[in-house]
Amino acid sequence: MPEQTRSDSRALILHVALQLFSARGYDSTSIDDIRQAAGFKSKASLYTHFKSKEEVAIALIQQIMAALNQTMFRAYHEAKPEPLHQLTAIGRAFISWGLLHPQEHAFCFVRVQQDILLQGKASFYGADMQTPGRTLTRLITQLRQTQPVRAIADAALLSMFVGLISRAVIEQEAFGDLTHEQKVQQILEVCFAILFAQPVPIPD
Image (cartoon, rainbow, N blue to C red; front, side, top):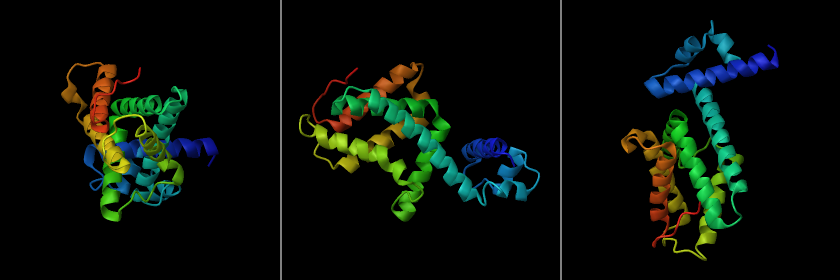
């Protein structure tokens, strides 16, 4: 199979899988459902790309995380080189991406939480997938030197951010007729209220 055709087929499988997982749930979707929806005539033709539904799910999560991480790192590198500005830029990028990609965000969040609950960690991550979390933790640690960061462990604060943002993304219709930018700003304001014990202005 030509490399381009193989790449296109793989992308189609992942796209179809996301739609099915979002509509039916992971447990109610079979590998054969994915095969049929993607237009593959036989299981063997699908198995040249993925051997199981779990392989599809892992590849999908890694694809989603790679796209999200690229977005956050672009924001980080374009921000003013100060911890508060960098953290704000990453936060805005994360929130904005989630609001624009709710299916991807919801699927990834649920699977990550499930994996952590059952295994104590997100075992399908590569080291590169964990880098944004380490960057955010480092920024929070640096901010403790100059800003009124709450006396809560860095990892716990980061977990609160992700949980809050993910819930807001999944239930974004609750915001009403706000613009995308207004939603991002409101979610970011609540994140700042969690992070800081006293009001800290959000950098532009």
